[in-house]
Length: 439
Image (tube, rainbow, N blue to C red; front, side, top):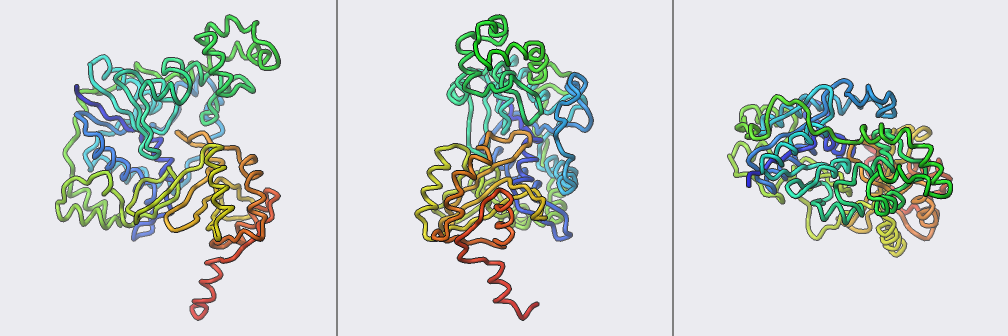
């Protein structure tokens, strides 16, 4: 069976930008998102050899969904300039690396992927979709599966059922009920995953649930009945379009040859030294474990791609209550914990907390995302709930903490009514002391 490999480039672009450090080229140009996406593509090619392949990005401008619903994605902020500056060179590098690139005006990358996946299914081919976007689980069937290189998750039909409690063909109904906060598509107020699964298990389909809405009691039943006029439109917004008119058929997406001259020029521009050396020595295609660029920095998060680090290592993203409880026990018992906050800006008065990282020993760390909203963002614990559980440790003077510029972190936590205590070491202050002669 032939294989089609499709990459949700827009999803990985945002995730790489938010995950990677602020890497810069020798000329000061931002390169973090470029590095993250290219690293992922190199890993995919090593792990999933394919007969046909394409990297799909959202096109500029509005889509048909904006015409249907004026508030679609209305809460999205403008693309940060450091990210926008990386798009053109990233596309050049992807093309030079031997990938087809597709951007289709008027629709989203999801719709292009859905259409190609449908073509592959009809054509008897296997389709692998690399994405972090849960919306695309609606495309999974016996020939289509999702892979997420950032979390090492693979979802086939059984995987979707195990993760969501519903088969792929019910995912659209499920998302219509719960809503999609990333795309600003409302669902039924106060209806979360558990209620949606319960209803769809009982009634089978959204249409049948709507026909029996009068049977649902309580406030949640009132909310369902009040949403009946909206739900059909919400379902249209959430449904991936699988009949987009495309300029190419899936079986025409044979990988173009790699342009080594262009790659060499772009690697030099970006300062990707090890990839440049690899290219110069005509090294064979790297394995999944060899794709780390030495110029990148490993971040304790599933959002970042793998880079070479000493073993043993343990990097984890805290996304569940169980994980948080496990790490809370670890940091409560540790003699010294390295802590760092991720925020929306450097102005401590206006900065919003979006994540916290912890390390209890070298190469044993975790990242707790709290307010990431971008295409493909995973479900996260609420910031208020997580901080409430962490507050006793954060305010404990007996539990020693290490960080860099912890005065800034103190202000950030104070914005959330937490008085950070137990500061034992601050590498920013230490650097001032050790290098005071350089001042």
